[in-house]
Length: 461
Image 1: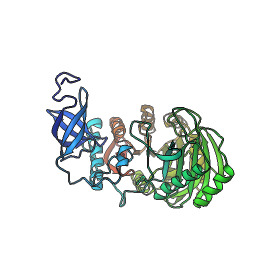
Image 2: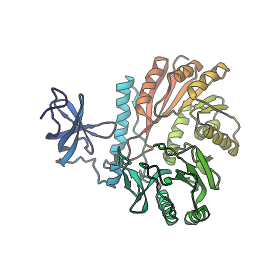
Image 3: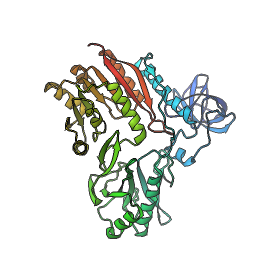
Image 4: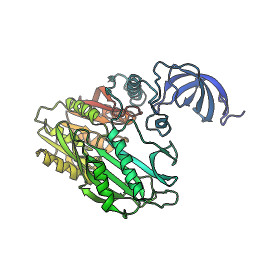
């Protein structure tokens, strides 16, 4: 057998016995052969297995388990093997306490490896008492099989739809709603989308549900604007699902992996449903970003508010404000909040939400955070506290520079990606904004994702 690279201690298709020492940030077991790491699906630290090498690279390779020889005490029975195949529940084979420890360790390792800040204390991950059925939103593809509409999810790395009717991590009422809507569309002969031929009509069924209100929104993503017979489909959905307050048709004619198109057609109610968060009521549109796990979001935001140390006299900047979910909570405790978001629809909803909650000490503006913050600084806005909750790519250097230039007392960073958080903490550290502790919060049980909250104190003041 020849290796793809000279000098490797293993060969492709070689079968060997290995012990798993660690997990990657993608949840793969790590087995080492003479220091060369092999990454293996479904391997847990402490286990040994017979494995077959499937792919080799210069620095690492991949293998699959042929036979498990010993079992970790952290292994639990798999709830649904389909959740592993499609990637919705990659950690479901791991005891929940071990998942929380794994996520804490991910943050620890990123702070050491990327930020070179090993002295920052990383607290234990805050988890859920019931880490199932937490998702308040589902976007489920619809395809055809044997003349019927089928809902499910794509096998990892493919466009092959795996039929699924229970996703386990979604609100059970959302799972039920998907099936009811699918069956109604089936009854009236709505054709499934065929992405290879770019024909058919129904592409996705999106369901969003308020955790506290129970209000439900249905979004039918179609290839064309034609959807007959609406006069029967809409009443049938309303009868089958009395919680529904909004039905929207989203038209996406493009051959693309992007789920939503530009055009929305409101079929019933308005393009909004409601939920509550930290004592405020929010109108949420079909395109609004709203945190997926409402119970854990309250934990996350409460930590951020605590970290802000507000007394009622501060001016606060909320970057990446979305529909105002944390802006309104900040406004309760600050003198004034300046909030920004690049998505115009989100700012419209944020202004509406402030008005409906009788909050007037917030200024919302549309724009990219890295562009608006320097402009606000030039206009004389002086922030005592800056709160950031950026996308996975983290903060732009121009934003970091502008935030430092504003010279706030502290910056509160809410992160959905430990690696970009670590990168940004190192940049802030060089500029005199120091972090001493990070608190991870598990918003996505059974998955690899973790959120974090950290306060950076301005040591220059």
